[in-house]
Length: 527
Image (cartoon, rainbow, N blue to C red; front, side, top):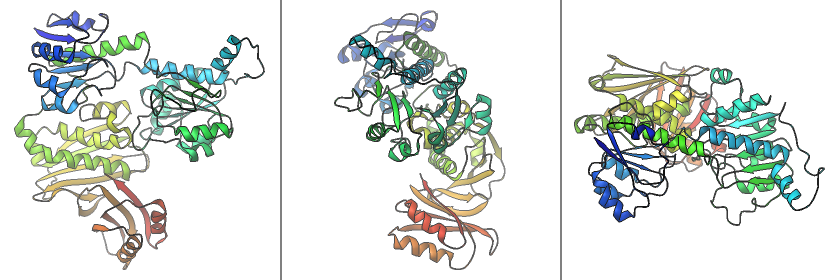
């Protein structure tokens, strides 16, 4: 009999799977102080929390029987994940339960911005009958640009199509095939900016998406565009948004999230062109029920040794396997990060091959680490070693794994191939004693380079003097070269150059490189 503690208020309907199980005893003890929780937690195998309970390192040190913590929601900032991992405790959340809730809130904000509902309501309650000021626009025939085509973005697109809107979707992992299946157009950000009457964002907030919609983006938009953000504050540059409203580029903005919450002294709040709500995307009774149901089922699966998918920390492996495979985790993650940046289009299929001593082990965690590295360039902390392959499937990415005897003389070799609509991109890596991870093949060219933080990848024709040109140009811009490797198949043919550099090149320096005769492409790779 397993014991599960529910320490925050959750309805019995939400934890029905646990209550009905003859393997689990559920105790609901809410409003426990940290000291009381430390005294209580040693007898429990599972813990369910929301945002009220703080699961600290001190509490986890007392949780001698604890196997799993379930967060009935998405955010796990109230749980010390590092300490949980150290203590072998799996942490699961419920990322799918609020999909429909957030989608419907997005569409409510979309329609409110089209018909000026909050503004008209406020005016009428103040005693004014003003029909002219609040003339709206219809959704039918308008173009909706969706930035981020994950679960929520896809659901929004379905409802937009029901309103006979034209939908353009952008996502780093959206392929033409996937877009066709959904029934939308695949476009880049510029296409959305230039064509959309309405724009809604549904991406995680990471380095690549912080201020994704900035002043330059607003300058490309149609005059009178309407903007909706029910995802994360910070994706839209609020200062640039304010300027775009004042300049007449943005007719209406509808914001559920802000860079600082609550948005104290935020000039967007109270501005007549802006509709605001206090982060209500997941605030429905159904969503709260669904996340509790999802996390309860996950806990039951874990306690019953059944498959689970929404863990947010690394699963446990035995010490012997960890010692052997751990160096390959870093290698595979760097390979993933490098490959997604080398590919010019989202991959449709990923092939991973293991050779040498790696064929003697279960390399599932190495595979997951590669997929994590590949996805994390765009998804950030949303992806981890446990949910990486699940997210890949969710984004329509297929992958295959094989063991092969083609080790090319290396003791252990990881080879990967990404297939895109444009073609294939490949790379391979290994471990060198005393040197650590090394990239030994890129797109069929043989090289030997460490996957450091900053790489420069150049495609060129093998002619005398090309290396000197590159070195001189980087030196002129005070960019230090740590190492340089050139790979070629024949004298005077096509070749690649990979450099480890101390800082990434600005776009103008990349532009100068492309002006050098016989250089065909140059790309920063940030690992």
